[in-house]
Image (cartoon, rainbow, N blue to C red):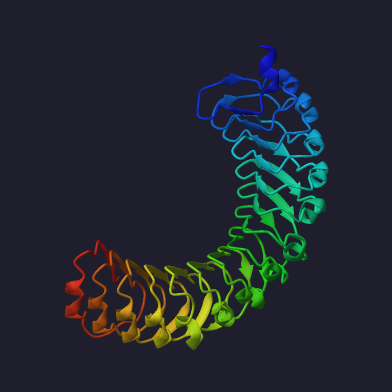
Length: 351
């Protein structure tokens, strides 16, 4: 048994272990990695683990700990990964976490963590992944977040109570690939310099209170890796820019639904490679441009609750289409016979 105390790595994930985490693990003084993810562990994280100076990874996600994140976590000077998602944790993120100067990965999503994010967490320049989704966190996020976290690649704050405006410093995190601020209470405008993030793949700000002009889409032209623009359920206004067809050729999902966008759909929309497009519940009007028929990969098209007047015959070119919703418009004339070419169509709404 004495040799066990020389353990450097423990991997017991995806089992059915119950009870508490043994406090005598602290006797494994050389322990660097503890992975107990996806078990039935309960109670607290033993304070004795705070003495493990070589500890690099604490992975206890998908358990039933139902306690708080212990302050002693700040004593684990070698810690670079915290994985505590789906643990029923509550309370606040301890301020002591700011002492972890080598921290790279922070996974705390889907708990009941509340309060504000400690300001010191934003000053750990090594952080690459910050996932605080589906908690009950509140307050503003740091306006310097992109400058103080220059190595940030993945930022996920969906489903919290954050307020204030979006930081204009995000573009300083030059390696940023994913931004998810959905289902919060952010207001103001979209940062116009996000176009500097050439590696940006996802921009998701669904269901907030952004009051911006929708022409911010033009600022994303240089994001050549962009795959998802998800800004539905805000207060976006203005007309769609002609440059809407200029973003990344990788863009497959665009959601602008439930805003206050007016005018017509620019013909440039046909330059994209979308598989899904939603513009429902806006103030768009006029004929649907025939160029929409160039979206040969399109599988879902949501254009309901607007003031469209005509259906182009080019809709028949969308042979992969499974969903087409056009309810509550003012469309006149006949249904284009070419629509019969859409052999994959499962849902058609013209009410």
